[in-house]
Length: 505
Figure 1 (tube, rainbow, N blue to C red):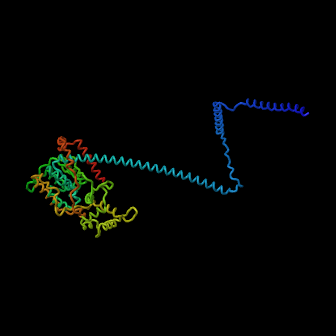
Figure 2 (cartoon, rainbow, N blue to C red):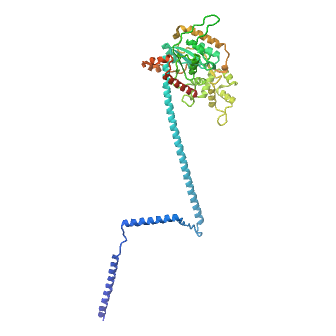
Figure 3 (spheres, rainbow, N blue to C red):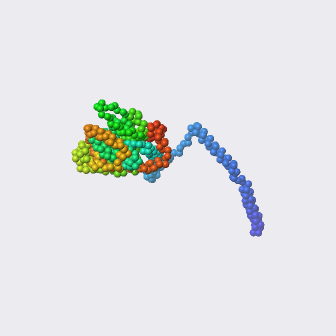
């Protein structure tokens, strides 16, 4: 029975196993027939493109219809949250910190823009100043060169040199190198005291007596009535003819007329004013007077307190912005008081006695109620600068002749030859006329002792190039007879520029 049962069950098991295999086979067959999701890239990209275009059209239509996407509402913090207050405070602090950082970044950006603009403006100003300085330096170099050429031509073609001296400081306006060169070459030199109206007549007469030991000397007032200009024309032999004296007696024989007359001198001594006065007095017949005037330019820069003091009393001190205009004002005032007559200083400024320069500056500032920018009492440096600036105004400060006359560089009388007695007689006449005059507006001037001669000028080096110029006399021969030329016009313009620069300084 058991065997029979085994025979019956075995086919059933076989059938069951066979059915399972069939199911597995059917499942495997179905799985193998399923399509893959892979697709071509061109199809994939086309689908993405169509989707983008569809979304774009939808957004465009929504924008046209005014449909706006409803913003997502912030649900906030639930009231049941255990640390809601602390979280709200933290969020508030975070928001304030963010706003502060944004404001700081904006302010920093603004400051950066301002700094950049300031830097660019400063660079532009510096570039402009550099260009202006370069232009001025170039113009100054060209002007210096032209003035040196004018001086060289004036010295070479002039038969008589009128050395123009400021009557307030005649000794400081003399050029030792020029006088030595004139003595070597036999040039006739005449001292002309310009601006004589700024000095007392007695002081001018004493100066003529001192300078007359070296060369002929006359005083003129080129701008105040042209007094003394006719005497100078008579000394040069170009005075207009005078009618015979009715008292009988022969008129003095005039000296021989000078061929070519040139004016030379330092800056600011009155050269051009004298040239204009000579032409007016000669009634336009001054063909013998050279059109250009020679300006003596020192070889070295201005140095020394005494030299700057003498320039200050003549009103020729350069501007303070320039390298030669920087002075120690207090030291200059101290030097002035050392050389000045104390009584003339007290009379000039109407002040009582003072003890030293510091006390003088204090009294001077107190008398004029000087204040600084803060409304306090002015300091010594500022007061000293005001004192120096006031020296050139009337009655001003003048130099008196030395007690013991000193010869500058030898006598310049020999080139004048036999005309010396006549020239001395003309000088005596003018000195007598000056001695008979009153004190004038310069009676209250501060008087100081004279110093050495003016600053050195390298005349020989200036004229060294003239020896190689073979045509210089031929080219300048026409100018000696007063012919107008383009070159003279250019020299005239150069000198006008030079005088304008002096006035600005």
